[in-house]
Length: 128
Image (tube, rainbow, N blue to C red; front, side, top):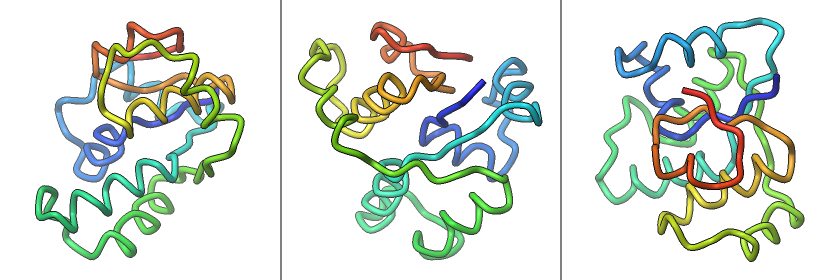
């Protein structure tokens, strides 16, 4: 299975948060699964950190790649076909970062690892 981490899940993994469901944790830890973090999540972390809404132990440009490497998570670039999926999405959720993660998951056949119930309303595979 190929998994795409929701931004919150990536951050929770940094401190082994109890919010992570057992099913999600098992899927993440399964060595047969490929796990990705979108550059969209890196962008979201950088923006929220800069606005003072997300305190990080180190600057975002150090924190994100360091945690990705520590967790053995690959970076998923944003490509044009993924962005064009946006026009096909119903306006159920307003968060632009989440909407783009949905688009990437759809375009690349990924399962989105997310606790967000709203995202499950979209035609995307989710796991929690």
